[in-house]
Length: 266
Image (cartoon, rainbow, N blue to C red; front, top):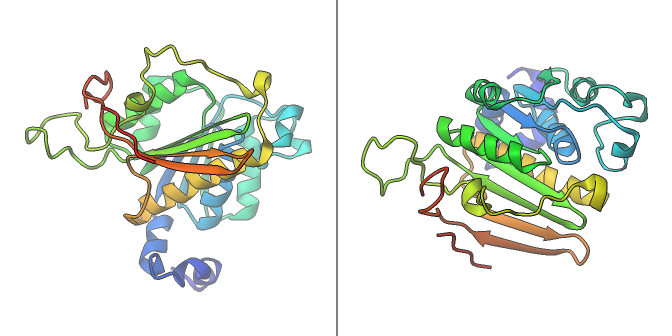
């Protein structure tokens, strides 16, 4: 770490839980963000400002005027541009040391597998179940930690699935089995859950900032090896009355993704 980096990241380095070693881990780390909308905007801003070595942005969409109410990484002058290009320009201005890769694509599962394989942590900031299930499957398969977020109207949630740890209750060498529950344990793919979209139901602007910032915080802790995180937990936020609740998750033995009952405690 050079003198300029020591100055830039000095407020991290002053923290006993981070220090020079933890900051160096961030400088060496690679993060993948799926979705550069309301959640991906604050997540990307904080990861870049914190000194992630490589940040890959994946989103096929372009900036729409209606996005500007909440997608804070984009500017009025960016309307019509690909969201990843708009975000890349802002992130380079915030921290030119970060290698920022912009991919204006809707990644299918095969492409996701390639991207996730190169990442140390994945942030799912997408806005649809199909992408969330696909990202969950690939992260589970490749044993990559996943930080998932969602927000609609005044309600948001964050969950962390650290698939790096093997399930000690499984036979040694059993493939594909991780200690952590997965997104499919929480919201089974065949549950017929209603999918709400911001475009038709609305979303409170600061809520996505809260959820995306929480995703960034959890991703940073995972990369630095800080154990006091939210692995296997679900945090729900109601921004109307500012009610916050944390629940503990466990694997669903009937889960089609991880084969892992979902228990929750307030």
